Length: 412
Image (tube, rainbow, N blue to C red; front, side, top):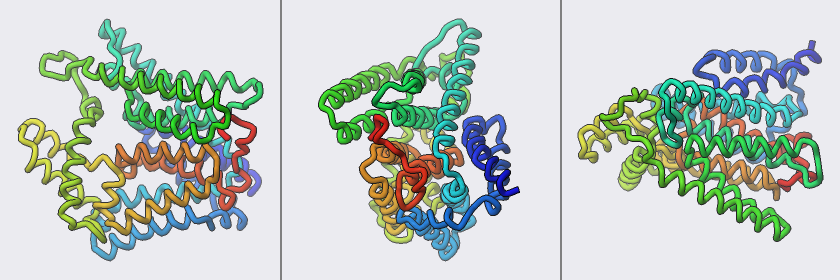
């Protein structure tokens, strides 16, 4: 029985991450798979697997998660903050559930296939909508946004992860899989441009800059520098044409709430300004305000500072968070919680050694944390869990058997 469960367990884990982008259509499926994994876990885990948890990054993340939980209980705000705290603990749960799995490639394949499936689905919807309307517009057009399988920021994150995985899998010498990795990189990058995911483009640019420090050959650095330049040009092209489509009153196309919620650039500017004002008040220095009270204070700030009545009503009704996970941790969990999270990030970077792949993953995570409160949404917690697992697997103290042999690939 143990042998059978051990053989099935990794595929259930893979199926979990393949199904995440389709959460709106099979909402209960990820939760069911999590319950199944938790039920199988005691029968497939070994004592040697549990020893993998004794590593600085995991210990620090456990301390950080524990601090959020205990401080919320001590300060009588657990009922208000349990939603966010639960998602922070979800990441820790995913790390633990991954312990019995020794084949990291299965998880990587799940991310690649999940991204391709989401792209195919979104493009198919875009073609249907375009055919119905009789015209198409790229970038921020409602056709593109409404066709997407999930929120653009997370679809862009998934595409970036897929690109990194394919890049890390390219061999320096000829290998039949190299062509497939190159095609996957091209497809995901074109899709990122299609949906005008500026955050994804910026993050990819940062990854390319980081890659310069891992490239030994001068010719390789020049090629990457040229590619980085291409990304910059693409980014400014998309940015320049961001007003392709007018969302004003004269627009006859019905704009869904999903489209409106995707226009977050102005939201971020206002949210960051209000968050900075709250920081200046120094009320949340040590223990923080709590996640719910932080959102309440931001909403109050919107009501007091936004002069335009329509925008004020939109911000207040939307109850927008800080759109920056670092600001959110500082305001909600205080300086102690913020520093514990930073220590976890630093420890993860140190434990990954001199390998490009985990360093790039951390750049991706930090980039998205800067623009989004990832731990406020379950899909964000899932993808944060994926990234952290991939980073930890490069650590000798953690999944020693899964450590990437990047000397055979281009990502070393």
